[in-house]
Length: 147
Image (tube, rainbow, N blue to C red; front, side, top):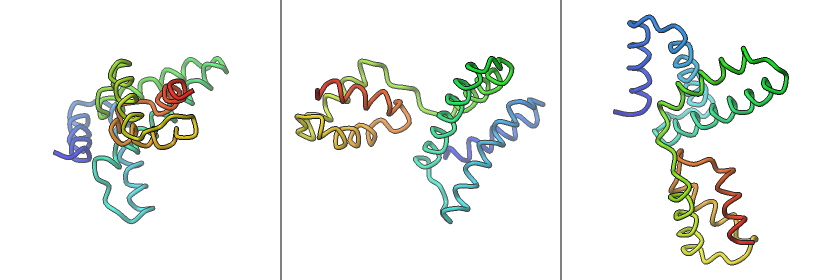
């Protein structure tokens, strides 16, 4: 079953179960996927759907940070709930040890020795850890190891 099909099935289940908040978030996810499909005139595969979900997660993180600074706990809690629903469709995150091993393997594979080679290493890690790691954290780890 594709990720898009799973999202559609979950939407139907949320409708039948009367879960209005969850249904709203799932519809938001579907709208983002459909928007990208229309904009690019393509049918998204699972990898591209994951990219859409990751972007949505990043937007939620940024919004939560802004709402917390402004003291708007009510809006921050809505964003946190949306993040939990979106998280259900993302693969499990890599642990720090797994991420370190992946970074070390990418450094060895690319032959990187200086911080100038950071782009190659991050690209290799991104390819292998799609949807399972925060790329900002990956870039920090790579930079630290190559410094």
